Image (cartoon, rainbow, N blue to C red; front, side, top):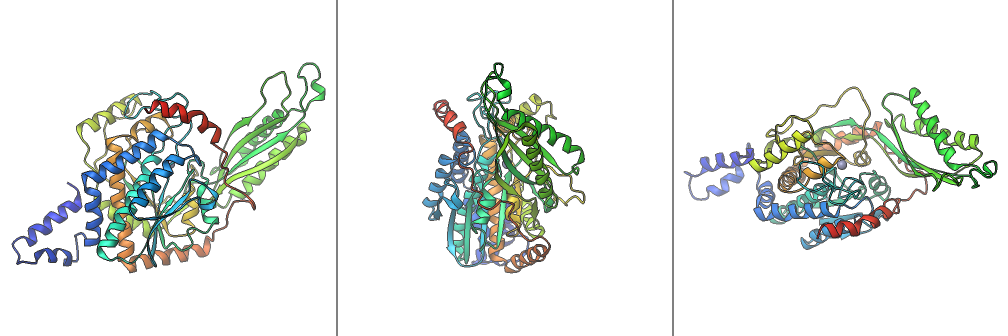
Length: 510
Ligand SMILES: [Zn+2]
């Protein structure tokens, strides 16, 4: 039984012998119980039909498995769901066709909920099959659970809207449909477009195998950049002296960058893929390009980026080629999660508690854990405690939610549904983020987020304290975009891949 159900039961036991109108008294008891505003939202989310409705949406987005900025069907499904519930939807936000903002209500406070829905390349896998078995070999798959996250966010704002309507709550609830998180693209452009400027607080979410939240600085800032070299083509055997290989420039650039690693601070991460490197060995490639992820802390990212650019310049000089283009796709900061927001989310995590898992679900989890050589312990039953930030920054992954954390007080809820021991960005996660346990996980996440949003609407002092913490923090951490002037969202980035796989995936889904 969930903790808040226990609370309701306890209150009912207290009031049952009371006089007529005892029902009213339930609302007036100040502590250890649910407010009527939370009750409306949670009752809606608790209905079997609600679980079913949003579960099916998450599974459909899982089947679409659309890559960043190609999420046309996923975004359309979420938009349709929101419009059916009376939300006003602005499309094509910040120059991205799959970016949208859904709004309900008016005036202050304005509470935002973030949601993502993009997939990852090469991860296609059948849902809830505990061994590797692609649905369409080489096609994309939802290996990070973003199919659940956009859906959980949409379920949240709909539940909040129902409560605002029923209980006359003043303010505005917004859902920020954010494409291309896997390539950390949308948020810096959304921030540049000013879409978060009037937002008082933001609730972010990510799927996980457990449930928890944290605060403080984490992860790495990231600049994603493609270097393109041009050379001169020639017969590789007949007249190689006539040619200048652009591929040589890419290789020398990579060698320079790899030697540079030794002298970078340990917080750095650096990785690349060659995008273009010629078609045949007997034709000197006159065009080559390489895509870099340059990652470090906010303090060190720009200096590291300049050093990588120098590697590219040096490679062009050494090979008599031209560094034709430096295309920055995106630039983002570390995550700076707000403590007050995290504490509020944690209080609602403790309120809602973990979902109950069936025997069949635990059987699947254990089979997957066995296949991966992990401890066969099934799904977790306990929520996590509030995570205290580490004093030492060690670097790591990045999320463009970092941008939002510097614009408005923000924290991230990790909600359950995944299998402990599964590997992120891997077929095992694609397998786990589908079906009944994913449905329950995202529904639980929506409950926590809805309860948190309602706290922000109905407890002005809590919101005030959170905003004060943010204002104080911002004095030393003012936002400065890492996007170069004139940068535009790379709408073409995944187009070809998606055009290749979309028909095959649609065929397989039939
Ligand atoms: Zn993710």
